[in-house]
Length: 285
Ligand code: 3HC
Image (cartoon, rainbow, N blue to C red; front, side):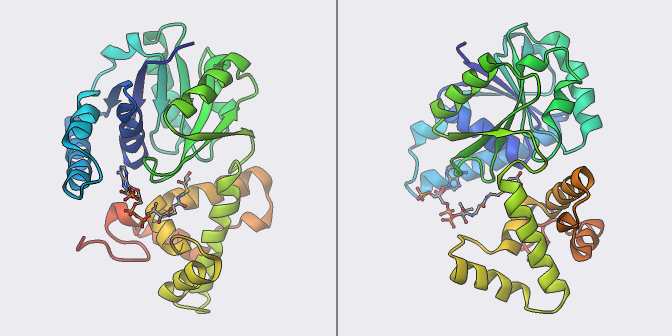
């Protein structure tokens, strides 16, 4: 099937970057948020990012205009009737996702594939909230989605080959590299990456090394582009905690026990970049 119209629900950090990726490849994108205030924030953010790239000579004004021209900003679901693909990128809460699928399904044409960008919730469980589990798939982008090449494609138990193949081809059309992953908590990347970030939290909590030294150690000693604590701040410490908790709850394996310091920081709303403070302070930037 040919996918041309993409409707993205939730334009936080991930949804907005995903919208930019599709728009830059000429897709007609609807970017949906619940409120005008969220839309205004998203528009200001994308305008700021793209303008900076133009100013630095990384993008032409025409390319920026092309991206913005391809995005419609929506606070209702009226344009779902033309969606070939819906990408849901809202909070990691299955009841919130369930409510959204209930609202949108009747408005989508038969052919519409629903993809979720969930990083931890079971695709089979989410698919079962819909009446089209064969046309439901996990499409897991990485932060920052404009830059990171990988998309993990996760089949739910009932995802059809037709759906999988269509989305696999689409990933390549937007310049990404898909990998096929069977459903399991954390998929591949997060199952490796998030316990590493969690372990970095333990190292700080135990007073083994400072925040800066942990990050320097992993940058210079393991050649990571950024340290695990800075990466936790970029991903969102609440997201990291949610992934650890899901992996623990699904497996009861103690290797997935969340670090108490991580939990404490989330309770204190020190979530990282998005709240201005996590392991580092971003308030001045
Ligand atoms: N749109 C388009 N391009 C952009 C962009 C944007 N919004 N923002 C940055 N870029 C481009 C830059 O222009 C640059 O390209 P160039 O070579 O043409 O100049 C390139 O992306 C790199 O950007 P920067 O120069 O600003 O930054 P760095 O070189 O310092 O790299 C980084 C930043 C890509 C974040 C790098 O530090 C990195 O790879 N970090 C690790 C990220 C990671 O591991 N992400 C995975 C997180 S896990 C996840 O998301 C899963 C979830 O479920 C938890």
